[in-house]
Image 1 (cartoon, helix red, strand yellow):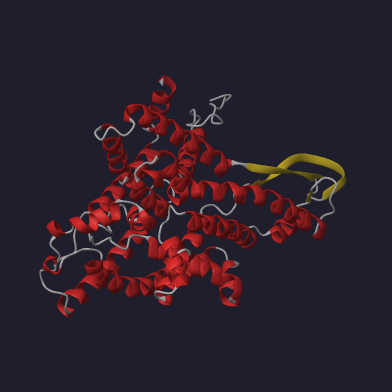
Image 2: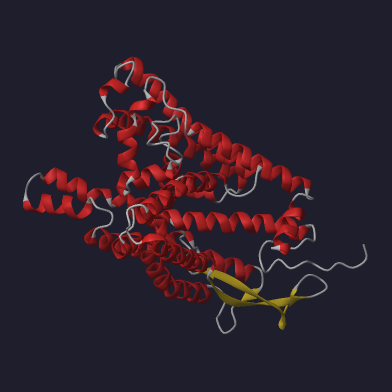
Length: 450
């Protein structure tokens, strides 16, 4: 505890780091305030049914979690930052097939700015479709007609669509400003803050259910907390696990050439066990809406009723079996398109490096690709297991659905990944100023002279 307080004290001694943390916290507060501002023309008092439907878990509960409760509040940020995430995924996938985007990816900073601009315009296009759909769905989600003070005509719909689109664009701007002027990845932090905002209420509902309803009492709460901490530790291992590939570099001569007869320093290529992050879960989650939709399309037939019954419950058996299979498939797919083993081998060859026992060039690329395939398999299994954990603990412990969602899936992996990334950035600032870091590897540097 003493060392932790010393590290916190060191943080406030670095003016730039202190300013960045202040900017980050300030912009996150702005985002949370916006999530509570209800759309003009809607009576916030009559949104209780919408809150109850989204607070009990299920697909609506997942959506509400990612918007930090803004979805249930009919807020100006009701669409959240997810349209931007969807646009980013689409642009990333289009980059595989469209030569123009492939060219931009190779142009460095200028190409990256152009791709960001395309992503922003696509975000607006997605919002234009999602905003009216959200507004029209409010009645089906339990919001009474009397809650729409101005009615649901064009006088309400047009301004509300503009406000929802503007809210998403403003949230996107906040995320980019946090990345540029603050600490951590801004977009990821906005999602994380939204997820964490629903955590206290979910835990309170579980606590009330266990204690006041005599459903296990404090002992069960203690067991659930210990299990949750253990799952967090497993997720940290999953996010940080790497396979180190040893690399040897030929020693350079005084004239700047490479002396291939002498061996230089040994380094490592870190290949992550879970190189795809949470993207396979996001892709799979998007497709999991399809079976229930097909069931509704099939009507009252046996197949239609089975599809609706089996794939409308995110804690159901068939839902989670298909969910796990899709995650494994998408893990291989996303890893294949995001880990360029051929480029890694070419860069290694140009820099005079080689993997001991493997010829530079094509053989090195094949070797790296084979290693990635080997470590992706257990990585995909771990990712699928974490994704279906909420359903397992829900049926095993009989806990509240909202609290069960924090035992795995996208929400927990995002929280763990963002926390680690933010701590690493703070750690880098501390180590550059010769302070102890927040992590064990951040031991104080010893300096000589000054």
